[in-house]
Image (cartoon, rainbow, N blue to C red; front, side, top):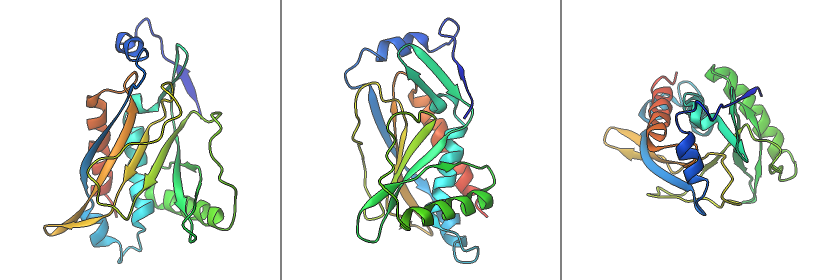
Amino acid sequence: MTGRPVDLKTWSRAEQFRFFRTYDRPHYAITTRIDVSRLMRLRKDLALSPFRTVIHAIGAGLHAVPELRMRFQGDTVTLYDRLLLSPTIPLENGDFRYTYLAWLKDRAAFDRHARDRIEAVRAGQPLNANDGSIRDVAYLSCLPWLDYTALDNALPGPDDCIPRVSWGKIVPKGDGHDVAMTIQVHHALVDGRQVGQFFDATQAALNETG
């Protein structure tokens, strides 16, 4: 993926970046409810996979917010044009593996790509965890057993700046359905405003499902 350096001399968040880099625990997670009524209403008629459709919407949300595509190494901040999406893929034996998906704006094209990659993972591959060499990535995980209210992730250290997005069990709400969704980010790169923009863009993508 293509990335370009961020000039700290002109970057409006440079002061916040340096400040939160001093924290031992600079990450924070925010959970909200996402409306998936349209997805659940159309899923049978359009043969939609809720899992893959939500992944596509999350990709839209991540790509809509530049700060969520920023990564740092030391004092070097890079803004990537595109991200890979790395969801956990559940296996029938209760285990899981990782895969890497190239996000495509066209939902149907992305769905075919994701379906093929997931089938390949389930056919047999090693864990395929990122060894740190892939930086232009976001981690995704689904917890379909839980309608949770808050979530936290295991993190290797304070300089891990890869966003993590999770979502839970889709449940009825009024005449439709909704789901808990969480994003965990590094405060040196992302403030609450950008988290709100992410959720808005993700919701908009789901509202356009079809």
